[in-house]
Image 1 (spheres, rainbow, N blue to C red):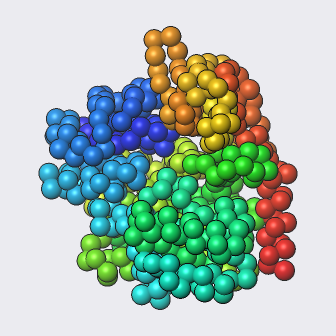
Image 2: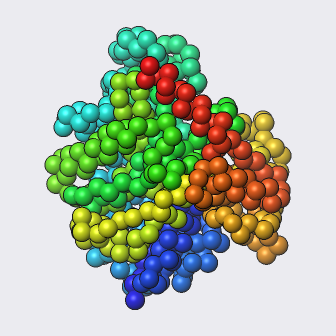
Image 3: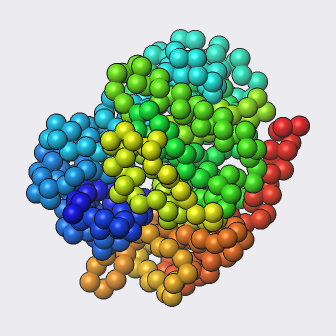
Length: 442
């Protein structure tokens, strides 16, 4: 009998719990959550509510369950050193230590790592600890600049010229605020192209890619409105994306392989977990936007339901450093994930849909899709939303058109003051991506 500790309480962790539950090993799942996710609870032998910073409590819970290993979902507990605490107690994890998690938690660490070891993919960038020189550096970019704090920002801390600020004066004002809070600010050239997510399993020596996914951050259809944690995503049956060339995936994978080697050479420790690269295909080739040290949300919901390999075996091979000897396969199917959110999600306080972020919702007949609970509250009289994303609805089929249709039909059965992006996975949106890349590639 195998026992597993799962840390996290979102839709990403719900699909991880489901995927562990499909294992032929029938693991007992012990889930540590900050709020109760009914989807995770349904797959768990035991659950515990607590803070991600309660490392002693997490370790004690793991010992009580006699767990064999842990799977860490969100970035926050990684940043707090939960993997280090568990390792000290003799419990390995699918997830990097606090030092190795800097791949995500410190954008400057990652940029410097690529530069030091001659790994391609960096845009032009500089780190500043004061405002001196920022205006002159920004002036070097004809297409604009991007400003990033060093640290976790929930996917919403990046400021892009033309979207979040105009000109050097506003840029300096943003940099001053970041410097005051973080002590350093990263300034990069603004890139033009199309983004894709390439999540990889890594045991420190071997890197195995998952199907490529494209996420959609903007709140409204047509890529309008403010950035969010992600409104949905899609993947294709060939495990590429319609606007990519085969070399684009290969280039992203090559960067990740070299980063895995570099982080070992830099720290002396093997990275064991998920290396999730956010890449952009530009006219000059593939560029790295950032790394995440865990599964993406929503991207996990696109790839994990397709895994044919026993997931417990996969996790154990990752921990043991034997990924190279394990055949990792995914179904050749397309997926479309659309997040159902309260109507007020992502909007300024003065533009909130009053009551939507605490309203009850009901799910109708949805047998042909996968539904994953995110930030919801299960009460005696039903399911209630919070101020964040509520449900991930995933259609899976042999082609994108059918997968998108399944997701839309299921969302139509969900009642309450909800919203979603109806354009994710549609031919119209994907064709715009294709035409955009044709124009960029010339």
